[in-house]
Image (cartoon, rainbow over all chains, first blue to last red; front, side, top):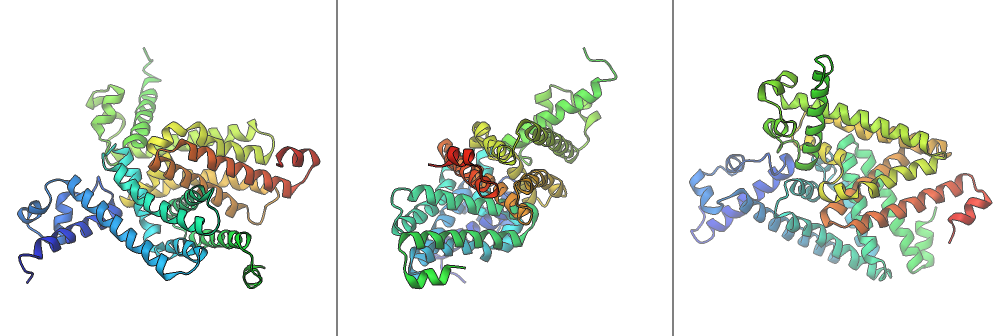
Amino acid sequence: MSTTASEPAGTRRRIAEAADALFYQRGFEKTSFADIAEQVNLSRGNFYYHFKTKDEILAAVIALRAAKTQAMLDGWTEGARTPVDRLCRFAEMMVRNRKDILRYGCPVGTLCAELAKLEHPAQGDASMIFGQFRSWLREQFEALGHAEDADGLAMHLLSRSQGIAALASAFHDEGFIRHEVTLIEAWLQSMQRKARPTKARQAKTQG
Amino acid sequence: MSTTASEPAGTRRRIAEAADALFYQRGFEKTSFADIAEQVNLSRGNFYYHFKTKDEILAAVIALRAAKTQAMLDGWTEGARTPVDRLCRFAEMMVRNRKDILRYGCPVGTLCAELAKLEHPAQGDASMIFGQFRSWLREQFEALGHAEDADGLAMHLLSRSQGIAALASAFHDEGFIRHEVTLIEAWLQSMQRKARPTKARQAKTQG
């Protein structure tokens, strides 16, 4: 049994987690209050205690995704030593998440696309998750010695990832994800060679 | 006044055109029978005479889009002389359609993404519009002398276009479309130079 102090926060989080998955798998518009309540096994009364509208749930889902995104980016910053290794973590994310991508596309891209069509006021908030990736990618390209065009490179890489998710999902083609990620990694390695060539690295990445 | 012979076909087409626009602008799930009937100013009875379910309308919309896509591709084939010029027509489409892309994303990509989440039986048919672009792009890359990797190049270019649409829409950034299309055109020109270098073309595209 939860304590009265921690239970409400825990329930709120559980609802946001369930809604997050449903919005990703079925879409925001298609997902009903009842669908979410059923997932977390709550009475309507208890559910409404936490969220009065689907837009409130959407705000909680976006906040949850933003927090998870930041934690993931911080993990990549700490877990990889060079900018290229960090950028490769981003690219590898698509291979790691390939099963979900093949079925549902990119969670950020598909939510932004849906909210744009709905002219939903939260579309700017949802886009800010792209903004988190963009800022982090930009920092890596800056660290790689591309200060002047770091933002353009960040947008280019983010864009490549979106295209991969869209086509892999449409064609249910896992091989396409792997192939394109290999191309991205080769491109990133070539940028590192240009940025600061070392004999060891050149030998490793050539051929 | 239409003749009785041509009117039913005309009405059917008008419904499909209206639904096409609404599915693009609002999404398939969000668009109701009533929304479409309102656009074409038809009574429920007349509307139901042509379409019994929203899935039937979706099938007509996909058929309409497939026909329009084929006509556009045929136009590019006839209107541009070289494979690179044809491929550039594809890239320029994004600049030409930028106003809609900024608001609603790519019509093909966003419909495929939505149908995937709905697990809709028409998702394979919707993906076939990507398939039309893919086949046409593949032919151009083959004509450019890339027979072995023509399909991979076609998928890569199609993927780049999807990424551009997704991010341009999320960030409402028209300049991003133009910048990325310039990168694609430079890439295509460089492939032409590699494929069959001529002094005139090299002088034109360098620097």
